Length: 226
Image (cartoon, rainbow, N blue to C red; front, side):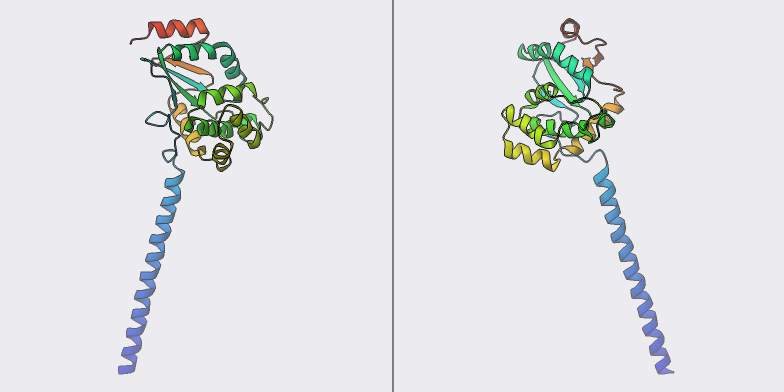
């Protein structure tokens, strides 16, 4: 009887410890799953320096009127906007009239075979981190690949950065490591939430400028509340 009782006690202990281990495994698996989920949320991102406090865009200028520019580096119409109105935007910044927030969205990944919109936007984040977003963005439009192509390879994105004065080593590492890919996703998600459905889209003091020509931009800034 004593032996039987000891055997039952051993079986009970084994069952108890097996249950404890099983619960511990489930808890650990749950924590790992939550960590993966949390890391994939659009709220988890690394933003470059020189961006807004919420990381939604790159800030250029300190004027009293806010201008938001949503652009995609493979968008041909964005390139047209840059060629037509980019100098006006720069002039308004230089005159201290506007604070421009550039939102490099990745709406057109489908327009290349290598997700060029995301790659170029992330690269522009590397440029923004080094204080040269505007110079780099202009150069990207000057070298814009055609829609439907593979887009520019990372080596060329890095070379373009070196051409506007970015350090080839640190900038190159940033581009190759995809440091700001999560930021690109955040900027794109937030633009969608703001009902920005296409690029280029320009807002002045929160109001869309339907046809953002130089004259229209200048007039919108002049009419905006200070």
